[in-house]
Amino acid sequence: MIVSAGLFAFGLWAVATVALIAVGELIIPSADTPAAAVVYVVTALGAAAAGWATSLLFIRRHRHQLVPITAGTLVGCAIAVVGLTLDTVLVGSLAHGYPNVSDGRADTIVVGLLIGHATALVGAGAAGWRATKR
Image (cartoon, rainbow, N blue to C red; front, side):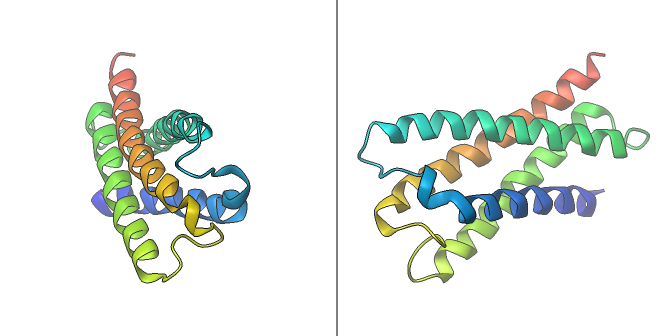
């Protein structure tokens, strides 16, 4: 069950990372601009939605093995742990910061990653809670 949650989390991380590398330079502003706040809000909403969707897929796959709120919390924790660990390794192992994003935008990326992982955890847990209420 934990391995399955980790695989779901890895899948979400891989999709999000590829998307960020592909369009990061176009959509990520410097942290000292007012646009950075907008990016943080959009990141929070998008990550919560991605956590919610990933949680619902996980719940659907394991509906006979776990109570939905437990499944949502499990996959949410996996999203946060896997994502933060892999992003730390990715950013820490590269001398130039995040791939395809200039150094002036690194602070925005780091803050966005922290916000994104936290809100993905909340979104996944909320999906599990909501599925329990049905």
